[in-house]
Every structure is written in structure tokens, then in C-alpha cells.
Length: 329
Image (cartoon, rainbow, N blue to C red):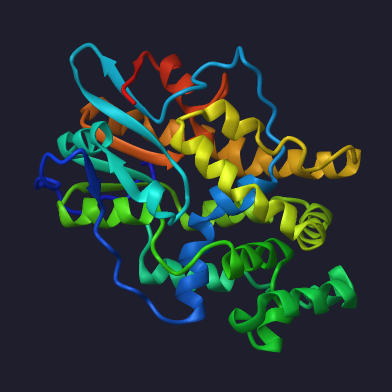
């Protein structure tokens, strides 16, 4: 049986007929655990997309558009929305076509369904459970810079010393990448829950953690060092990434950071491994998990926009399942 999580059923309307619908605000949760755990995975698409080296070409399919309608004979329509894991107010204002599709859906499918249990489990998964220590792996200089970079959100020394390199990378992204507000994905989750939609998580938490853990340790360390060395350049690409998303340009999202690794072949290899684990492999899992829910129709799928793009993207894989894919927005 697929590990898609279900909650309550009947939907209620989402707002009125304004040209843009603002999503409800999340209740703030205090503490490092909740803020880093929930925010960090949601921010992978932005905080790490600005470091990804994703190849792109003008001929790639599904290069333009954020909202797509899925149709198949005898099945009510469903929709796929490519999100940006950001809490920028420009991103969180839903265009009318997106709000309309959301209001018609009865099921909300997201990358992962979060609860307080997942918060604690992810916090624990961020740390080594053996005798490995971060300072030993990355060196005292990198560890000291990391401690300084984290500033007020840093963990106690003992907790930080046990942090895995990929988790340290997420922590520095959380420290300065965004504020405390909910991301677009989180806001959609809150709205869907308020509408009493059926909720589907396309991944288990341990599957997403496994994707991080599967990144070779030397790659984790290399990417952490690169993020510390090139923090200003990577942060400077956040705004172009947001603008590309607002322009609905998936191809631009994919190519905007192709130069992140420069001409260093080793660093390009590390970025390729990161992309394989966090984008390619997870996209295939999402397509598999959607197979049965889409047969019931009226599903609103909200996943990171990079999962939609290209010949191996989610839309192409759903097309292979027999759906007619039509761009709505």
C-alpha cells in the first residue's frame, strides 16, 4: 500500500473572487527544532536550488508555466502547481487561476506531510548517531566559520558537533536565507487543512532524510565548504530565482545557477550528485505515489517547480501515464 497520508475529507471554499488571494498566516512555532526542522526541508527548493547546477535547453518540454491541468477520459481533472519554497510575499500571493483550481480540488498533495512528530524525527535525523563529529569531518577552520555563520540560531556545542554536513548546510540556509514566516508550500498546507481537504504526503519523512543521507559524505562536505566560501554569490541569486518563478519560466529556474560550480569538475560532480538525489530521484517517487490518487481526480498537487521541468520531470512522467497536460497559468 502506498505511503500517502490521508486526513479529513470535505472541502470548503477558499476566499472570494478577488484577482489575487492571500493565503492564511501560519501560527508561529518557537524553538530551534521546529523552525529549522520544518523550514529547512521546505526551503530545500530555494536555499539549495540557488546552488544546483541543473542543465537546461530550449527544447526541454514543460519549460514555461506553473499551473497545469491533467485530464484523462472518465476522470475529473486534477492540477499540478510548481511552487517556490519561499516565504517572499510576492510568491505567496496566489494568482486567480491558481486560487480557482485550488478551490475546485478535493485532495491536496504535497511533498511531505508535517506534524510535530516529524519535527522531532527530523531534528534527530540531522545528527550522527555514531562517533562521527562534524569538526573532525570538515576541519576546525570550517567548523569555526560555521559556528560564526549560524550566530543566534546555533545549537549548543554538543548538538552542533553531532550535526551531519547536509544538515549544517540547511542550517546556514535557514539562518539567513529567509525570515520566520511560512513558505508558500506551508501556507497552502494550512489553507487545505482549513478547507478540510483530503491530505496526501508524497514522501515519508524518512524517505526524504534518506535522500540527504544518500549524498556521499565527501559531497556533503564539499558543498558545505562551497556554501561558506561563496555565501554572498549564492544569496545574490535568490532574487533572480524568485523573479524567474514569478515569470513562470521553469527553464530559467533550471539554468539560472548553472555557473554555481564554475569550471571545477569536482564541484560539478558534487552538484550533479545533489541534483540526482534531491530532484531526479524524488520526482520519480512523486510520480509513482500520484498514480492511484489521480485516478480519483480533483487533486491539487503542489511541489517544487523544478520537479515539473524537462523530459524527466513530473509533468512528462504523468504524460507517460496517459494524462493530457494543459498549461493553465
